[in-house]
Image 1 (spheres, rainbow over the protein chains, first blue to last red):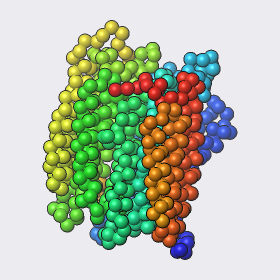
Image 2 (tube, rainbow over the protein chains, first blue to last red):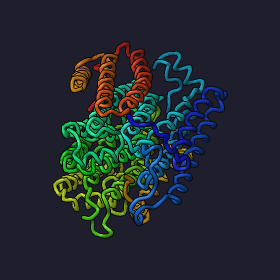
Image 3 (cartoon, rainbow over the protein chains, first blue to last red):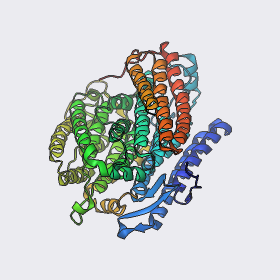
Image 4 (tube, rainbow over the protein chains, first blue to last red):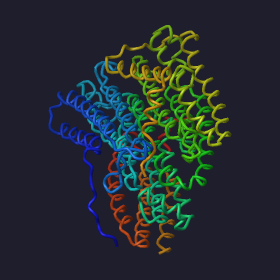
Length: 530
Length: 97
């Protein structure tokens, strides 16, 4: 048995994690002690302040980070090598924190619902009962959603920085558990919302069971949970390689479930449709960023030397995911489900970038690395998705949001601005030039091509064309179809949602016209620290 | 040593089959817990084999995580049951295609 060594904790580098979890705990205390009418303001201000301070700290850490080997990597390994605060981590932390800030703004929106938030007045009151009506007329509001959001953000920050299988498992659960609850808290259509929570929870717990058993097998192979030690064992071919292969497969099930890759995508449309729209917006954008961060680190750092065994698997998954997402999206009649399937297709495109890993020596000077391309794509995807779901929240009638696609017909006449912004986000997802989506797709396709994955790229281009047909169909419905009788109205949002949509649109446009700075930033992040 | 790993694999498979075949949400959830505990058993067995404590410590973390998951899971299942008077996973079928 080896001696226990006291780990060195670099408090400054871990400050973003500590701030976010501290704010989450403080939020719980506010729920317990502050009077009800003060909670909303206190929680929103606290969450926004906490996330902003964490974002500033991330910038400060990035500025002062220790640089290794001419900028190939930067940062430190902390807490006995279990948490890596390196360039890619800092990039993802910044991205997640910005998306979370926008998420808090969407959560705090009360203008759209006529003075109440999108969350149930009292989740414990049964739908259709006197208690529910009372909770709703007396203006009750679940302000617990802000601490839950902050706990989820904490998990999202921990997940891509985990340099150890156990830390990764804990991060995965900490990010998932609050999201399960948030999905079930919708104010309107509560049966759908509760069903979404049940499905997400059961399938999510099922997939984390697979993840854990995979962790156990990889530990059995390598004798350590640490990524560097696993890499060492893989290089030396130290153990029973059957354990390693089955372990990689089982861990992949857990991770591919989180990003919604086929054939583990079945929950995505149901949950995205049933969850309250602000939660969907936040979850669709930020969870995918965090989970792809974890996938990149696990496969590049721990299993990087064994990439000949996992690359073929990822080829198959990427091809399947793109085709399933793009083809099933065409058949959808609900805007939220349609965006959900489109996010499945995007998962496939991002996986196309992930499998484009090459040895550093094979790269031409100045060539975009797979890591850089995926980080850039995640930024473009995150902001376009967030903006698109925020727009969906604006289209309403007396019964709440209207998501049926046929009722969106003629929306361009009702509100040219909102329809125009939504069309812009759809064009970005389709990858039309001068939007961020084009540059992102170009980056991931070119790294996959450079790594010799031309069949995947061919399928990706076909899937892009199928998906483009779908997005253009929605734009046609909004602009060229005649409105049917009782069409929805576009509610003018308060400054909170307006800011979020403007942020999404601005970033999407800017990354399309001027992608250089962010690509450089992703390049500056360098490689993972081993 | 191998016996423990084989036992854990059998438990994992039983849990997995249970999740796929049972209809009651509570039973499905119990089967998921069985899968997590199969993972625990494997972790502890491998820790003994490798002679280090990583796996045993991991098992404690998994227990805590599983307990937190029970809290969330039962809350969600109970809400569904109170609304629908049924905990069958087949009844919750408003969202499809």
